[in-house]
Structures are given as C-alpha cells and as structure tokens.
Length: 106
Image 1 (cartoon, one colour):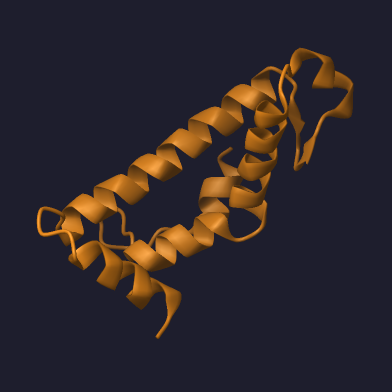
Image 2 (image 1 turned 135 degrees about the vertical axis):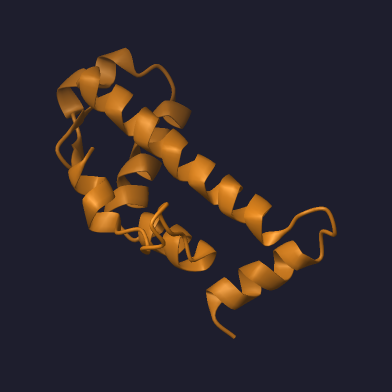
C-alpha cells in the first residue's frame, strides 16, 4: 500500500471528512508554508535554500530553528511533492499542481 493510499484510508475513517475537505486542508498547509517561508526570507532568516546563520540572534528558541528547518525540508526535501501527490491536488483548470512552479514563486 502506498503512503497516499494509507493516508487516504486514515482520513476515510472520519465520517465528517470528505475528499474535498481533505484537499482544502492540504492546500491550507501549502498556503501557510508559503507565507511562513516568504516571511522568513523577508526577515533574512532564510537565504535561498538555507538557514542564515548570521540572523540566528533574532531566533529566540530551538523551536523556532526547528520550524525554519522544517520549512526548508518541506520545500526542498520532498514534503511539498508528497502533499501534492497524496491529495492529487489540481488547479482551477484541472492541471496537477507542479511543485517546481510553487517553489520558483517563493
């Protein structure tokens, strides 16, 4: 069983969650990650594809460093592709979302 089938089966045990709701949730995750990534870049905490060591002074807790590393791994280590695959996410024209296009728009 693939990971996407396993995830879909897990969601199906919740009677109030349908495919549309799952897709909305996955899109919200992507949207939040994009907004967080852009904010981190604007503040100089992330430069290109890595954590800016010189700005660590502004990061107060280990949790914040972990969150920034999670953002980087989400976009550059397959997290975004996994969400798109699991949700079979498509745009308004019915084309599957392209992770490379999303990353290039960051």
